[in-house]
Length: 518
Ligand code: KIV
Ligand code: ZN
Image (cartoon, rainbow, N blue to C red; front, side):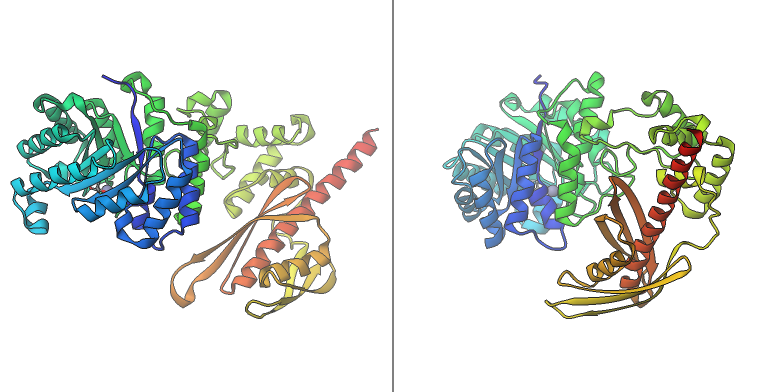
């Protein structure tokens, strides 16, 4: 049996239909191009009959995507098939994906048809689609709940008519791995012309088994897997392609199959899709979650520092991830603290490890996550964490006009001094107030990330602002929490300014020490 598994991505069809807001043509094109760049074999780019917007995006994508084959969905309706073909007509080669339900439940209570009528509709639609392309995929919708005799019968007829890919969808995410495996094995045993087609599966994740089911299907002989990046899709979503792809790579010893995917593009594509679809990736999401390669427990951190393989089953760089994190929290041990200090260029003789670790635990309990610059401050400046911060907000005011200018004034306490500054910009109130603060501190900072999260619901919700700032080639994190989102934005920036101030104190102190030692 062929050892190549075809990866079929339906982010732009099954994924997109589940989004709260539909995507623009430009956004769909961006997604299609990043999927193509990742080496996806087939990209299902839409369901052109469903709306003029969908038709247009399929049409645009078909002009540009060249390496991946594009595919469009159609019901067993002549117009659907004709429109799908027309939408993709500018592409050198394309696939038409036709679907029709075959389970008794769907046939009776949704379509009001008997099985013979279903076979006739399916066969006649395939014949119609063959006028446009010889690459036809047919999905027996709700296949996992379809009577096995019926499934074998329709699959045989479809292959005889010219269908090259038979898709077995678990439309409602109902099946379990062993059951789907038996369905696929039955097809291989009972359908005489099965070798003339590729068997595909399309799993939904209602019971959290989409990836497990797809793996079981591969082991039973399926050679096309359908899914979406990050698992987005109807209800609980579809098979997460990044998980399947990496399972195939990491467990090649057992699965003995491979894909055409450029693994190093996975992380980037996942991020692009999450951003464009406005679907954040949960931190603990396999492969692409921010914690997927982050180690928190002291025992694990120590183990990873001795040999990454102790707690990592795949190399983070294999999916294109550059930074691997050891989270510095109260669960971290001395090994992690020492690792960060070494990374920053300090030898163990430069600081007192016992004192540093005690201070670190105290700060971690208070702050949650500790960063490298915090360790530096703890090691070299006698900062009492309870002491007053150098910068603190006394007062601010903002005025904004829609599509116009925003003006902000801020009164900032800097140690024993008080400064007042104002700024006006056309980039909104947050930018105005950040500029006013900058006129006071003159720190050469670049705001790299600004994130606003609603904490709680309704009118009592708090706005939490997280920012990432670059200052002299180092990254600093700030957080602010208040009912007023401008106030949380100011707090987040003041949080960063205080950290930078402490780092500058550390540097001054280190310079003085060097002078004394000379
Ligand atoms: O879930 C499903 O059955 C589908 C088909 C159209 C393949 O999305
Ligand atoms: Zn689906």
